[in-house]
Length: 66
Image 1: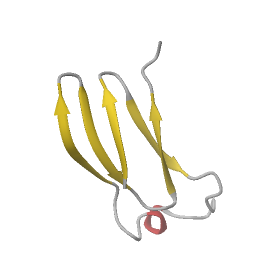
Image 2: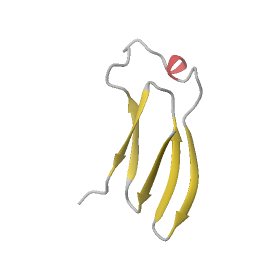
Image 3: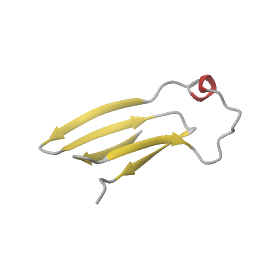
Image 4: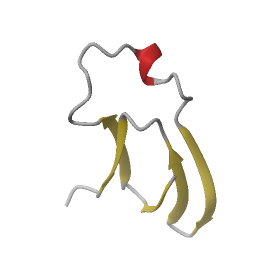
């Protein structure tokens, strides 16, 4: 599980890993379970969450546009 904190207008990206088999189906991708997002805490303009996803997916932090 990846734990991240995000502020207003910041986001996360979930996408396939770079070396994923292009023949993999959605059923194959989610065979070990779904993407699960757990909120641990929230405050004024920040939320702390955990993201758990199949190993074929990568999770990236994305900052707000400047």
